Each structure stands twice: as C-alpha cells, then as structure tokens.
Length: 230
Image (cartoon, rainbow, N blue to C red; front, side, top):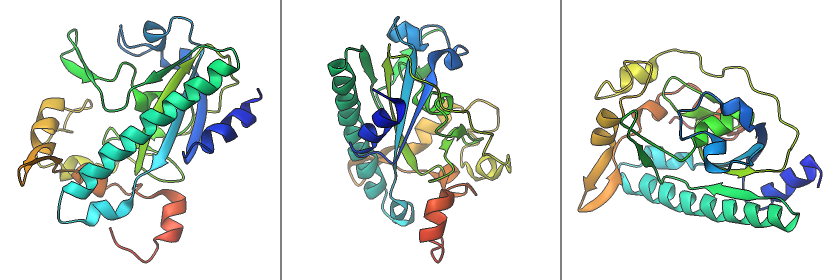
C-alpha cells in the first residue's frame, strides 16, 4: 500500500490531518514511554488530528467544551482501531495509542500517555508544540484533538515543520495559576485549576492558554471565521 493511498484511507475515516514519522524521531522520550517500549517492532508512528469546534471557547458554560473533548476523544479511539484493522489486513502489526488515558510515570512524577500523542504529531510533521504545551498546526492552529497508531510498517516519513510558536508568552501571562512559568508545564497546578465540578458535573473549567494563542485558528479557520472574534 502506497503512503498517499494509506493517508487518503485514514482521512476518509473522519480525520482532517494525517502524517507519518519514524519512531527514531521520538528517541528523546522518557524511558518506558518510547514507541518501542509499547511496540518493540514499531518503525512508524501515524498521527492524525480532528479540528475542534471553535464555538465551544465562547460558551459561558464549561460543559460544551468538556462534552466535545470527551466525544472527539472517543471518535479518535474508534478511528485508531480502524487504522489498526486496516494495517493488519495488509499484513502489518499496529497498536493504537489511547486518547486522554494517562498513566503515572513514577520516575518523573508526571502523568503521561503511553507515548506522547502531541510529540508523535510533531514527529509526523503534523504540527509543532507551542509554549502553551499544545500542538499547533498550520491548517487549524491549536484547535485540534489528536490520535496516534504505532506500526511495524516502514512508511516514508513526512518532513518536520519549522516551529510555529512565536514565543509571545501570552499563554504564560494568561494562566491563572502560573503553571507555565517554567519550560515544563506544572501539571498539578494545571489539573487542579482546570478539572473539577461545575453544576454537579465534572468539567474542564479553564482553557486560557489555548484562548489567547495567536495561532489558535490556523490558516483554514482564519479564512472561514475572519469576521468572528474569539
């Protein structure tokens, strides 16, 4: 199966972006969280993204954003399964990376995905990681949600992108709990502020670092939402 044929098949499953990267590009990942710690035979990480509805950022209620985040995560998990089945029908091994299901890394005291999905996206040329710790894509800015699959299929890699973050530090200043003051996000401060109960229901109550990013929308969204202020 040719690379572009595979990319088109994955896009038809319902994603907006798809890229391929060599797992060697993730060699700097923490021990235990490298691609070959998950699938020893892995050669390629496949990354894909779905655009996140911009209107949820303007809602005065936290629940639309939270519901979309949960629903889009379920959708990406389903697409990851479909990608794995597609690859295995062609004779390749494939493993899905669960979305928003972090495990605790006792060595560093941080919660992590079994491999970093945003670093996988960067390694696959889908986008670059900004100062706010979010992935930024040229097409859709940072308003994307991500999925990934590891495979032993040796796919030609896509080129890496140049850094899309301007280091304006608006996200650093906007964070209500100063979780971005250091180079590495202070997870505890961020989680304690963002996640909690709202109206008796668990919700994501803060996305200030996303809201103020000059790269929030990306080229495609900027063209379509040019008259709307977020």
